[in-house]
Amino acid sequence: MHHVLRVLASGSAVVVLAAFGVPDIARAQMLDAASGYPNRPIRIVVPFSAGSGSDFLARQLAPKLTERWGQQVVVDNRPSAAGTVAGEIVTRATPDGHTLMITSSGIAASAALYPKLPYDTVKDFASVSKLAVTATMFVTSPGSGLRTIKDLIEHAKKRPSQLTYGHSGIGSGTHFASELLNVMAGITTVHVPYKGGAEVMTDVISGRIDYGVVPMPPSVPLVKAGRAHGIAVTTATRSSSIMEVPTVAESGLPGYVYDGWFGVFAPSKVPTAIVRKLSEEVARILALPDVRDRIHSIGMEPTPSSPQELHKLLATEIETRKKIFGAQTGKLQ
Image 1 (cartoon, rainbow, N blue to C red):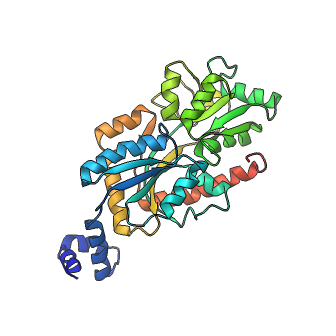
Image 2 (tube, rainbow, N blue to C red):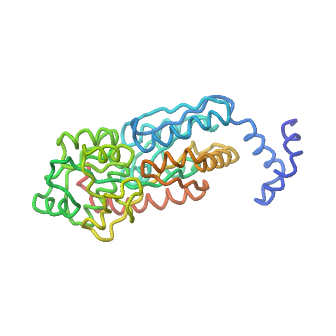
Image 3 (tube, one colour):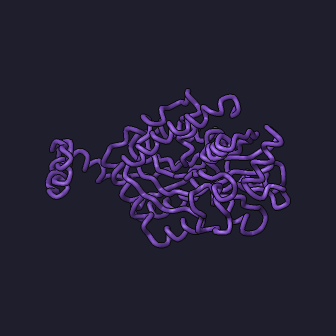
């Protein structure tokens, strides 16, 4: 009761929440929940391996959150089953904001592809904030005969179901980006799932697979070093981090666009006030010049959002991916 009275004395905060039509006692409880958070270390679960886009962003946020709140924030990589293992860890965690997940738009693809996940992607996660958007790159080995998207499409039409490509796991954003190209171009290729983009790049460079579909963090440095060849990026415009690589639309498939995104999620029953506090802190960190510069350097654009905006994006993209993966039924398993 003393906590409630103390929070009710904070008139300005109560006035703000009153605008949302929240009863006085409920407002007080919401504010009190946020005021004591965090009170122990925070774990950020990442569904992909070190070097992935999700891992990179988690490691930008973790030290800033530690510095801000005085509680250690650790990154826990769980690269398995296209994010399903990490998702189950988070949805089963105590809903107090001390277990979070940073993942890619592949969370929507997994929901579209797997009807029997151990959780409901829309209902069992609390959306916190979008973090960034990024291109995905189609890459080959320097000695490959595939130099453009047009080359890739022509080879695939001559050799149906023979070209192999690597991606970051069934249902991942990179998997979706490649299958979107297959649907639009009318081709069939053989997908090879990996734990993350770094592993895909290793096998692209060695020639074990014909091409890879890889996020920018693990692909840009290797393409710039000449160890891999960038065929095209998936966004509507070229990436500022590697302007010499054309878009898929420029390189042979007009109309193709895929924007990958990353976001922060928590268990669904985390108090609204804690979700807001997290969302506001994410926006503050993404606005810091040093953080923005590092994110830009690997071809990402910081894009914080409200929890509501991320939730809407997730639900919409699940439906979009159902349509694409539905068109490829029988070719993905």
